[in-house]
Every structure is written in C-alpha cells, then in structure tokens.
Image (cartoon, rainbow, N blue to C red; front, top):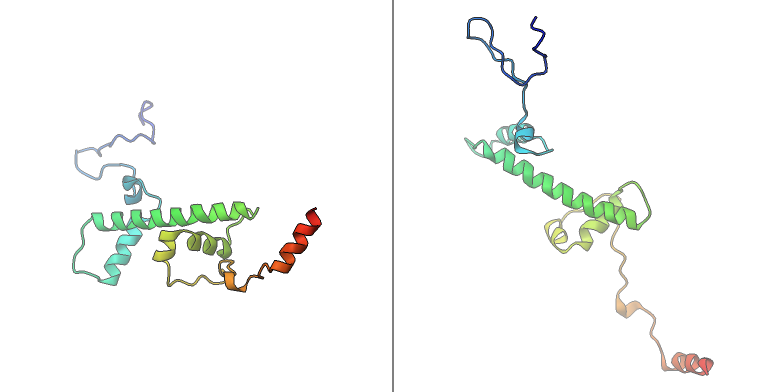
Length: 144
C-alpha cells in the first residue's frame, strides 16, 4: 500500500508485469458527449429496432442530443405556462398550453393528443355578443 496513492486517482495503474486491465474509472458515452439523455440506451434501442444493418458511433449521440433538446424546449415552455398559472407542478394542461402556443412545436406535434390536456381557450369572433347601436347610445348618454 503506497501512502502517496489515493484510490480515486484518474491515473491508470498497471498490474505487476505490465499486462492486465488498467484501473481507469468508467466514463459513460453520455458524459463524453456532454449530454443528460442516455446515449448507450438509445444506441441499444436503435440496434434492437433493426432499422439498418450497421450504424455509426455518432448516430445515437446525435439522436440523444436532438431528443434532449426537444425535451428541454417543451419543458421550458411548460414551466413558463406553469408559472403563469401560479402553480409549482407541471401538468398535462401546461404541456398543451406550451405546445399549442408555440408555432413550431404546434406544427411538429400537430397530430399529437395529450391525455387530460384540454384545448386552448378560444371563442370565435362570430359567437361573441355584438355591440349594437342602442347600447352604444345608452353608454354615451350615461357618460354626460
């Protein structure tokens, strides 16, 4: 036991004889790519789906980055909708409000239905009560 060596060092230590596995800390593909979403799991899903005979090492990284970006975008807008409604927890309703109020996300997720999300509040202008001339005169006579 070497007193100057700590077990948490990143330096590779070789086993006596020069051969054998180096004792390096494992670094995940997600950490290497600087992502939160699991690159290895997405790669495994791509392989099991058999979309192609072979795929490159960068494919799952790129796909994970795109999915992570989309999730972050939706969650940021949903968080803003949540704050606007003075709530602390994001609900399906907040997700719907976020997606349908954003032009690009609405186009991308146009055919998607979110369970218990509801619809955007919208009343067609034809259905709104008309401002008739009689009521306009009554209002003006009251002001004088």
